Image (cartoon, rainbow, N blue to C red; front, side, top):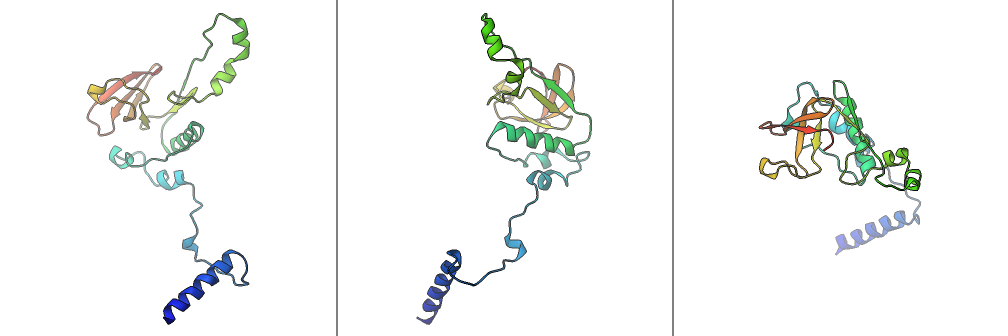
Length: 176
């Protein structure tokens, strides 16, 4: 009975603190505070990208709520990786006979859009980056929406990648 009474008192004391009715203050230990370190830094800065295996990377991912944030994270992770960056740019244009449409949607505006299911206007890649397919290309070979691959070679119009388990290599035109 006595234990129940002390628990009730303790609960009331906590509520008073939460509602700022009590003059008491509580100092929590540092391990109770959330880490303010950047999650990208936590996941990728300790990796030696020159010797890491695909299996070590395949379980690492950062989920985001929109494409803009996803591209920011991808670009930050890319900074940790060695090697030169290759930039692929999309070609955006209005397919309309009406000249007014050309004025309504200038190329700069089209380049700023990040549409779900499509790559961004400016795609920055390095050899060793993990990429994800956004389309079903060859389901019989395992090339489906969501398949993750590792880039092995970057050319002007072709991106070569291998499956994350390293069993098969594929080449893709940059327009995919």
